[in-house]
Image (cartoon, rainbow, N blue to C red):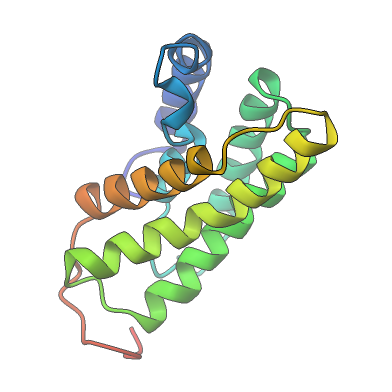
Length: 160
């Protein structure tokens, strides 16, 4: 993590105060989850040897996310960690040298959160259009592909 953990926490707090208002805009439901974006941008791949900082950041983001959404802190933490773990596993298999690979890794890392959010919304009687979840995952993949930098590593299956 190049930026200090406290900087990410303050940024997450500010976005947690602003994002519910943004979500109420006409196309706000299609926007990706900012807490997942912050986590994926803050934690490098491959993971550092000590995973305590990424887990602390995921716990802080899960608490902030659960404060402004329908998800519980445990479901938020599980979806954030699942996205982080899936991104780690896929980024070890695919090179980040091409935009399309970074897009695929970013999009698939948003899928656990989309599935958990769909299940929670269905349990509470909110039936959302499935295209909302697809757009959220696609926009997450696009933003991750744009804002992550290339490592210049080897192609498919290379050990880093």
